[in-house]
Length: 448
Ligand code: TRP
Image 1 (cartoon, protein in one colour):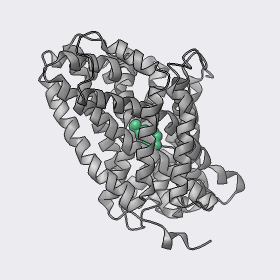
Image 2 (image 1 turned 180 degrees about the vertical axis):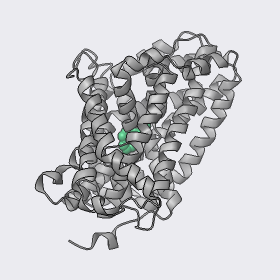
Image 3 (image 1 turned 135 degrees about the vertical axis):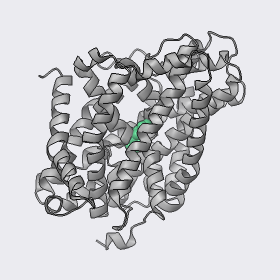
């Protein structure tokens, strides 16, 4: 094998790397998922647990993954097998690559919905009469093939960017799209806060319902959301870390990514909840929040068309920068494993994800009768990937870095400057993260 690190593509700049990682982290999860998870789990009480989960499990794991990628200079699956000294540990990275691929299949579907809504608002095709948003969503998602067309457009755009490579595809796309994203979300938040009764939404969001702390499902939701939102345990951060050179400082970058991701989710919630309460709607009603409740509000509010265009433009951009990362992981794997060119890998992995995503795209229409464990196909796959497979893959990674990887036991693989920070990280990755993941997982599966 050639000297991998010499020939390997690298990020052109540290800011490009951080923006690309933030782009992966910030996605539908911060808007479409975070808002309803907060709503369903007791507002402020959930936020508190969420922030603690980030500090105790999220950031330590994020740094561990970046360190593995940087040390191995290989994509996720081969990075773990290169660093493993016992056979059984070699497979640590493989589940993440598979999960990434699986998530891409349905993520592209929802991104496609966002694109459809963006176009509908931009072309003034969205129905103006109040009360028609639910029917619009219903008609669209149950259509025989339309969701598949929008999904195809999203996947095609993603493939195009990933073919461009690290510096000229992924890094450049993120450097353009991420600032646009920041401007839109802040403008929308300011607008939301000026609505009548906006304060009620803030109370709902931040006022803690402490009784929820007794609910085990709150902790599973916080862990699942933290993993999903940071893109942990999916090979993304290992793969992106492998395009780093040894001189990049990881701790600051890791904290910046986690803080940026959380801040974005909170600002998105500040866009959503004041608007929801201002118009007397119900929060916490699943993905319908973004695709029924909010469009309904946009139709009723002044300048709602502009707000609708901005909001769905935001969703599309946020989803695109995540789709890029979700495709890069299996594509990088295929290049390393089967020697495919970047072009072949992007086209084949993207094509396969598109085909396998079709059942999800049709899961409310042609395949609407199909139920897996009582849920539509798309929801069932999301549950399996984010609440079952993800924690298990995260556990394997934490154990690998904390207990198996020799270098991590003796050397400062993350590059901490303060010994206390390194001590905290070691403790978190060895004890806190594995224990938290196991307890929460067992409890959620009703095993303890
Ligand atoms: N973090 C993304 C979000 O919040 C979704 C996501 C999950 C993701 N896993 C990923 C993105 C892996 C990129 C890579 O929406």
